[in-house]
Length: 296
Image (cartoon, rainbow, N blue to C red):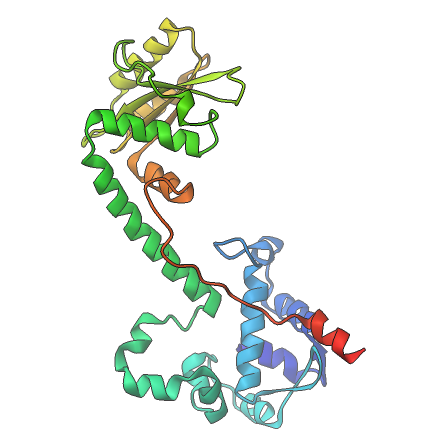
């Protein structure tokens, strides 16, 4: 927020685009930094932060808005720049009463002294929401993986096939039901890579606690050779030892993908396998085009 206010102090008025471009230039941000997006991928991270910085400064009375999409530094903002602080953050802006009325911090801080402990004021509201969602997902992944480890071997093999079908392999669970498992030297299931069954992926499911070593991978490669297959997936509730990972990278005539427990739980959440939606939040933004039509 301080770099933005300094930029505003050097001009009479600036559009939102001019503010964005000049702050980026003054901070020396690279193309890569300017291209970075929020974890959700829904918005450019710098645009999100500059937008909220502009809103916070305006709500604190440090910026004025003489007309639509155009801002100017206020007299209060000019006084602050005459003796600027080391930084401007949310806590600093709480010294301005009109910001408190917007932010709602005065009442909430008195009612709940610990409320600031769960809010990272370095993040924008969207980033705070995404951070909370990621925390919920990490905790859910641990819970899901613990539950998966409780499945019997046959149930885990069925889960692996269900996950692959949920990811788009094969047509439906009907296409993988009744596949013989265990009698073929290490292949627990088969899923069509495409809906027509032109190519097939062979599966091995390992509900293990310890790391899966290289001998297991070599045995699976031998099983693939026995059925004339070149593609396979080994999915485990645990991890894969480094020698096993190194061995897979040396294979030239086989394509083996290793999916450990953490990655498997991520995929289960992503594709809605073994989880259900509890609540959905909708973030709304002002529709400037709507108001432009009202003015025309």
